[in-house]
Image (cartoon, rainbow, N blue to C red; front, side, top):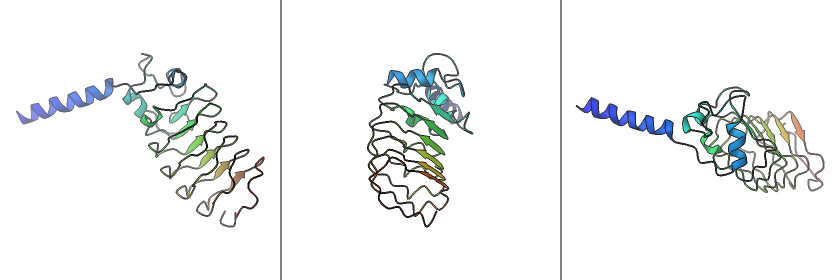
Length: 188
């Protein structure tokens, strides 16, 4: 009897999880995700993103990507469900905040041209590419990103960047940023 009861509970939990939709309040973000082609996120074509569909976004740059560039997004709520995503492209929107803390598998974040002033990437240890160019970014802590190889921070409001823990950094773009007067790249 215990096996039947446990199986029924397991079925209900898994069944409930697969039918549960991700809360994506921004209509533009939801549209970008539902209509994304490579990879197709809305696998069942119902116009919603189920938790299981979000979890299935994993792997290389094609199958593990979330794409919402130039989509008019003002609220990125919902991307936290894509915990297995490796690439986030959310450039050229109107985001004042961007929480990527749950996306611990991210290797690339392209989120420039947004008006946010801070970005916390401390929970993204596999991050190798970060593009924050032409944002209103005033500060960033890159100490927990040892794999960072490319940093695009042109036209930000950064007045300093500590790159001492980013020994793998090979490419740094920091043009159009008069606030930074000195930069130590001796460990890079």
